[in-house]
Each structure stands twice: as structure tokens, then as C-alpha cells.
Image (cartoon, rainbow, N blue to C red; front, top):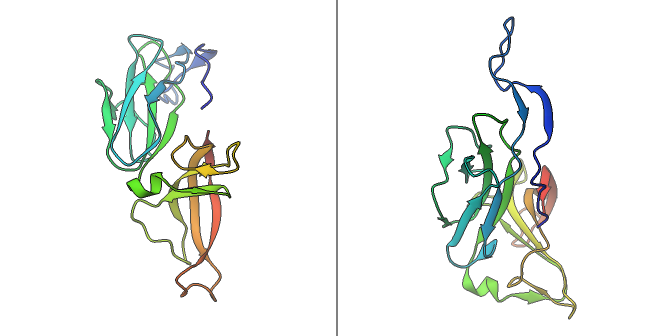
Length: 194
């Protein structure tokens, strides 16, 4: 995963609270950098221990596991925690003298042990709809990891994924909808992380 810059860019008079018809009450000239998400893996058959860090020691880190953007009311990071089920982890740093950081995101998948041993001679896409059914009438959001082939020509799920992000799935084609193996239409959800 590409690391973000630790430098906080200068912003001219950024106010986070709208104050129409009145002077801005809180103005920030700096923005916090993205927090770091530390985990041994993003894919496992057991809970994954996660820690969060930020170079500004008194920044408050807040996170969500449901895909929502963290706010000052979101869960405060107090030490390591475990990802028990597949989740989209969003983390944001807050500080009273700086504008909040951009959101840092990671996709974590918890799967069965036998899936972890799977390998193939073609790239593998691993999806988790978190129990939602994929239909022909509406799109279903899924958490996604993509595994490309390695130097030996095999894609291995036991290795780190080459890509992680969100997917939007729908059953494609009315003629195959009732069959056990369906065709799926994939569209991205507008943003991905690597």
C-alpha cells in the first residue's frame, strides 16, 4: 500500500463550521495528514489485530467499520482492536488547532481457512457482500480484493492482495438469472484504494 505524505499542507483560512452572514469562528491554516493503519494482513481466516498511528502525537484518531466517514462522534482509537468480520475501516485524525485529515481506508476480509489455501493460474477476485444477496434489479456493494499471478504464474490468496476496494455488483442477463452459475455485472463504487 502506498504511504501518504506526512506533511500537513497549508490551507488559506479553512472553516469547518458554516456561519452564513457572520464571521467564521474557527479557522484552520493547516490540515492533518492521513493516519497510518497497521495490521499484519488485510485478509485472514481469524480476527485481525489493528493499530492506528499519527505523527502528530496529540491528534485524536476516530474510526468506523461500516463504510461511513468518521466524525468527531465516531469511535475513538484507544489502543489496538480486532477486526472480527469483513469490514471497510475508515480512519480520520482530529485536532483542535488543525483541520481534520483526509480519510484513510483499508478493506479487511475474514474468510474460511480453506479459501486461504486457494491458488489459480488466472487472477482471482475475492468478494464479500457481507451477507447481502446480489440481484438483477439493484446493485449490491461488496468488499473486494484482487490477487494477480506471481512470478510462478499462480495467483495465491495466501499472499497480500494486489488491489483492494469496493465493488458494485448486479446479476447480468435475464436468460441466466435462474441458473446456478450467474453472470455478474461489476461497476466500481467511484473510489478504490491500493
